[in-house]
Amino acid sequence: MSDSLLQIENAPRPAHVRKPPWLKVRISSSPAFHDTRRLMRRLGLNTVCEEAACPNISECWAQKHATVMILGAICTRACAFCNVATGTPLAVDRDEPAHLAEAVGELGLRHVVVTSVDRDDLEDGGAGHFAACIRELRTHAPQTTIEVLTPDFRRKHGAIETVTDARPDVYNHNLETVPSLYRRVRPGASYRHSLALLRRVRERDPAIFTKSGIMLGLGEERGEVLALMDDLRASEVDFLTIGQYLRPTQQHIEVARYVEPAEFDDFAAEAQSRGFLLVSSSPLTRSSYHAEADFARLREARQAAAAG
Image (cartoon, rainbow, N blue to C red; front, side, top):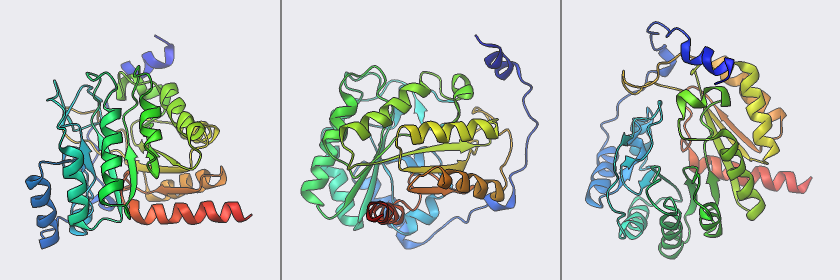
C-alpha cells in the first residue's frame, strides 16, 4: 500500500458535522408524488430515487420524474457511500423492459434515465438487459430520449459495446470521487477502468453524449478534483455533474465537510473552462437531477459548438 493510501486509511475520523441550511429540502405530499410511487409499486419497478435515498425525490416525483433502477434492488458490491442493499441478487426479471416502457408511457416522460445495481454475478454484468430496455423503449416510447447510468462492467468482456450499440442518447458512468479515495469509497472499482469505459463509448459511437459525476465532501483536495476534470476531458466526456455527498446512515462513510455553494460555482467555472459541453454543480446536484432539461441544453451546446 502506498504512503498516501496509508494516510487515508489511518486518518482520524472527523467529528459530526451539522448539515447546513442549503441542504434542507421539503418533503412533498402532492398527489403526483403519490401517483408516481403507486405506479412504481404496481409495475414492480425499483428506483434509485428510493434505494439511494436521494434528497431530490420529493421534487422529482412531484413532477412525475423517476430514475428506474433495473436488475433488482440488491447490489453485488458494497461501496462506502451507497445506500443500495448489498447481497445475493435475485434472478433477472425478463418482463422488466416491458414494465419500464409501460411506466414511461404512463408518466409521459420525454426523457428517461435508466440505471442499475452492479451485477458481478452475471456473465455480461447485465449489459444485455440494458440493451433490451433500450430496444423496448425505442419501440413503445419512440419520442422519449434515453439516458443510461451504468455500472463499470469491470471484467465483463463486450459489455460496454453491447450497451453502446443499443444507442442510448446519453451514456453516463460516474467516477464518484478522486482516485486517492477509491480504496475506501469505491472498493472493487478502478478509476482507470471507469475512465477507459467513457473513452470506449466515445470511440464506439461519437454521436452518444457521455457524462460522469462526482461527489464532494469525502476528503478530496481541490487539485485532485481539477486533475479528475482533466482526465475526463482527455476521454472527451461531454457533461460533468458535481454534488455534495450526504451520508445515508451511520454505517456509511462519514462526511468530511459540507462544501459551500460558492465552491461549487468555482468548480463549475473550472469545468467550463476545460471545455465540457455542460456542467451541473451544486450541493443538491445528482446524476439524473433535471436530466430532461439538461439533455436539451446538451444538444444545444453541441449544435453551437458544431456551428463554430
